[in-house]
Every structure is written in structure tokens, then in C-alpha cells.
Amino acid sequence: MEKEEFLLPKKITFLLIFISLFTYNVSFSQCVNPTPTGAASQVFCKINNSTIADLVASGGIIVWYDAPSGGKLFENTEVLVNGLTYYADDISGSSCSTSRLPVSVIIYGDFPTNVDVTVGKCAIDNPTIGNLSATGQNLAWYDAQTGGNLLPLSQLLVDGQTYWVQQTENGCTSNRFPTTVNLIDPITPTTAPIQSFCYSQNPTIADLKASGTSILWYESETSTTPLKSTALLIDGEDYWAAAVTFPCVSSNRAKTTVDIDFAPNAGESNSLSACEVSLVTTNLFDLLGGTPDTTGIWTGPSTLANGYLGTFELGTNTEGTYTYTVSSVLGICPTKSATVSVIITIVPPPTTSNSSQAFCEIEKATIADLSANQNNVIWYDTETSIITLDPSEALIDGEDYWGALLDATSGCESANRLRITATIIVTPPPTISQTNQAFCELDNPKVESLSPNSPEILWYDTEFSYPSH
Image (cartoon, rainbow, N blue to C red):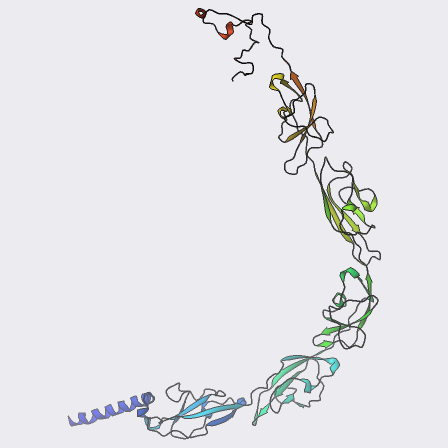
């Protein structure tokens, strides 16, 4: 019984020690170890890929954290990070330090900066190693990634060659960073010996042509300032082209001479819209706006007469768009054209199934009573008269009337007219020998009892009343 009482406290003690080993950092009140000692700032070379195991601190069993208390426990194999602060803790005796030692890590020997992976240099400038870009301390250029030859700054660059640069700071030498060199030597452009332009187009330097995708133009073979693309060209002037392959300009230039011509003037387009009935012979040239040249020719749906005047005559020419084209005197400028669209509204004449229309005298028929198959018919007293008849005007027996169809949309009337002959039928009144007729009431007399009794006779109760239907 005493033996069991002796063993139980030992088990409890071991368990407490085990728990303390894993939870000592939960409460500082449990930490009794002194703070580790060591340099507050420790320097490493990047090329060595230093790890937690390379940190130096004095004490018992040293472990490293990312915070002054709590935090993440680092593995010894984790690579150090420049500028980061690491915290050393002594965990010997299953305890911890009363406070941790902060150590700031400084890593030297990083790659140089501002190094071009690929760089173009103008061959005409004879660039050297000294023209390559890199920022760092104690820079050195080599012809290989490792080993190789140290190159002087005066050494000329070779097209397609890769050069390697390293820096050495605080005794730490970096890995080398590559720069591949492309020597650019643009080919001299080619251009026409003479380039022609139209004055009215206000040609500029941007309109000059030369081989290549990027060209600079100069006022002479040796000038150093390129001309602005917006500068106006001067007739008879020489201009010099240099090819550009960024950032280089060709050493040789090509010459062209500018010839400026005056553009033709075809005037401004217009249109002619007319009714067939009112269209007269017209010179289309007179319809063009502006001040067109008189050297042009007309083309269109039909051939116009009188040269540049372009005379349009109804019956000879057809409607449509007619184009007036003028060519440059020297043939340098493009031709100019203007158009006149001729639109003729043709209205067909009205029709009728009865060209001879009869009316009773008693109806007092007027122009409005004339009948056609269409609406909107206006009437004239002749085939060619221009004064329309009043619809209320009385018809005359045996008279011919001429109808024209009026188009409500265009306001045009038909050029041809429909002829209708009006006939007024005059029926003589009946005669009777007895103007006073007597009847016996007993006979129940009716209208048909009046004498004479005939089916051609109609009786009314007044002089002006009409039969009801």
C-alpha cells in the first residue's frame, strides 16, 4: 500500500513536466529561463540561402519565433527573410525565457536592379559594356553566368551576346543577372525621286512615302532635327527620309522632291425634282453649286447634249443620277465629281368608262358632276389650257372637258388629260288641253285620273319638287 502511494506522485510529477514542456509559452508566469543573448542585428549573404539554423544566440536550448510572445515557431530549415525580426527563446529545463531576444536579419548580395533582360543598342553609336544598365554596388560584368571572363567597361558589345552582371555589397557577391544585346542597324529607306500631291489637300510631312514602318523626315541630308508630321509640304522642296528601328535611326537617308498640283473643281452636288407636266429643257451644269470647272464630262442613265452643259431634255433623256467628272490638268490630283439627281414625277391620266356623259337639263349639272375612275381630278376647257375650271361652273351641252389627275403626295398633275364630252338632255314639258279638271268625290279620283294619262308623265305637287325615291 505504501509502495503505491509512493509511485502515484511520481506519475503526476512527470505528467505535469510533460504538459509544461508544451504549454510553457502560454503564460509568462511559468518562464524562468534568462533571456538569450546575441547580436541584435545579424548579416548574411543571399547567395548562401541562410536558414533559421544560421541565427546565433547564446543560452540553453534556443528556438526561434516570429513574435516577442506566442507566435509561430520556426523550423531550423526555414530560409531567412531580409528585414524580418526573429525572436530567440531558451526552452531548456522544460521552461522558457522570461523574455525573447529580438534579432533583425540583414541579407546582402541581392541581384543588381534596373537590369534589362533584353536591350537594343544602336550599332552606329558603338555601344560598350559601360552603356549597359544596372544599379548596385561594385558591379562587374562577365561573359558567362558562372566563371567566365571579367569584361572591361570599354569593351564593345556584340549583337546577340548575353552579358552577366553581379554586385558585391558588404562582402556579399550576388548571383549574376543576364542582359541580351541586340545591335540595331536600320536599313536605309527607299523612296520615289518625286512625290506629287494636290494643293487643295494641304499635304504635310505625314503624307510623304518611304519604305519601312517608321520614317523620320529631315529638311537636309545632315540636319539633326526631324520635321514635324504636321508641317505643310512646299512645292519643289527636297526632303530626306531616315528609317527608324527603335531606338535607332539609319545613318543614311533617301531624298525625294515634292511636286504640288492644283485639284480640279467639279462643283457641289444638287438635284432636280420636277413634275413631268412642268419640266423644261435644263442645263444640269447650271444646277451645280460653287464654281465648277468647264472641262468636265457628264455620265448617267442617258447621254446628255452640249458637252459640259449637260442639257437634259424630257422625252430624250431619262431620270436618274448624272455625274459631272473633272480631271486634273497634270493628271496628278484625283478626279473630282459632283452629281445632279433628276427626279421626274410622272402621274398617269385619269380614266373613265364613259367618255360621253349625259345629264338632264333639270339637274343643272356642273363641272363637279363629271365622272372619272379616280379621285382628285381637275378639269380644263382645253387639252393645253393652264387655268382650271371652277367645280361649280355649269356644264355646256356638246362641250369637251379635259381632266388631269392630281397626285396628292407630290402635288403634280398628269401631263396627259382625259377628254369627256358633256351632253345636256332637254325634255320639253307635256301639253294638256284642260288646265282645270273636275272630278266627282264619289269617284275617288287619283293622280292617274288626271288627263292626259300616260306613263311618260310624272306629276308633282309644286313646280319645283322632285320625285321621292
